[in-house]
Structures are given as C-alpha cells and as structure tokens.
Length: 246
Image 1: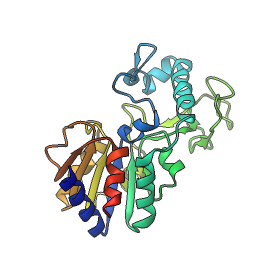
Image 2: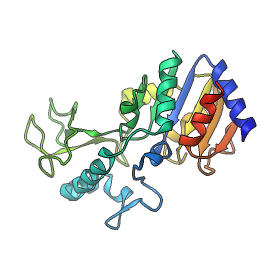
Image 3: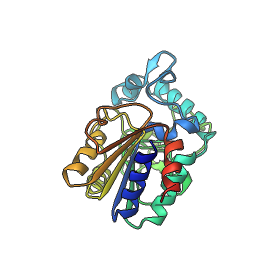
Image 4: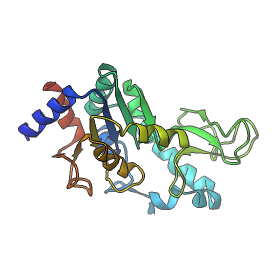
C-alpha cells in the first residue's frame, strides 16, 4: 500500500493536467445514503424504480417524498477528508478538473473549483413541463420544502429535481466538459462503481489518450483490472495519505 501511495503521489506531483472523477464512495464517510448497499432501499423501493421520468409521471408525490428524505439526510452531512483534499488540489493545481456523479453538492461546500456535476444537484429544481423560464432551473435549499410536490415559480406547473434520471441523457455541456477532462496526464477515479455509463467510460477514454489512470475504492470494480494502479481503501483515508506525500 505504501509503495502504491508513493507512486500515485509522484504521478500527481508531475502532472500538468489532473482529472478526478468521483462517485458515491467519496461521500459515504459523510453519511450520505447511497443508491446501492444496505442503505440503498427506501420504503422497499429501489432507487432505480424511483429515479425515472416514468416514476415521476405516475406518482410525483412519491418521488418527491424520496427526494425530500434524501435532502433532509444530506442537509446534516458535512464534507469529509476526501472532499477537502480534492478541493485543495483543485485550488493548487491550475489544470485540475473534477467531475462528479454525486448530486449532494458536498464538493461545492468544500470549495472545489473547476467542478462538473454530470448528474445535477439535489438542491436544484427545474420545471417538469419545461416552461421557458423554469427549464433552466433554480436553487432551493429549504429543508423541508414548502410543499410536496413543489411547483414551478414561473408557470405554476410541477417542479422536478434537477438531476439526471435513469434513461435520461446527460446535459450536453456537462458531457462535453467531462469528455474534455479525459485529455489529462493523470486520471483518478474515486469511489465509483464503474458500472454507470457514460461516466464509467471516462477512465478508459483517458487511458487511450495516454493518461496514467488510478482507482481508489473500497473494493474491486470492473475498472480495477484495466487501470494502471488500483488502491483499495476509503477515499477519506487514502487521499489524505497521498496528500501527505506530495
């Protein structure tokens, strides 16, 4: 483990362009509930059955009850050591870019720069009907929300969480930013399951372009055998140890 951490630190130190992809494992130590694992069920519903346009169309109140529960849980969470190290690197390395699959905005609260949130944010809403003003979305950090389901302040129609649901395409500008970030010297994938595309394909894109690729995760993933370096451990433990060696 020590040799791996030293190698990773040396690669990061020498990198002109550093890209970091993060997933739910980065926020686990902050107490953020995850889609998968023991806390992945809510009232016997799977996240995959609630986070879809079809589910919202059938029962918007049920979907919003789940999101309201998640917002309440995350409101009490704080950025952990992993968020803090990543934020510090984003401020120190001029060409550091962070791409996150997380919708909790803990990277934002940690002060991360050059951040692309490819799946959106729990703290932002948009108009379900896509009205001209509401389609762009707005921020609402109130816990609890004033009403369930909330309404679009522009047209009075239903509001939806401004997140990317299963079956939906990523926002074009976010996808472009994520793909551009694969042109780097070091690509770190941290706390991801490596099974949700297109995010799971970014590390492979980076490697094809010559980047040194590394994975930090509690357990092996489909990407573990293809990256240049795989480190098993919690991001909140591993990243501070890497930072100490820089």
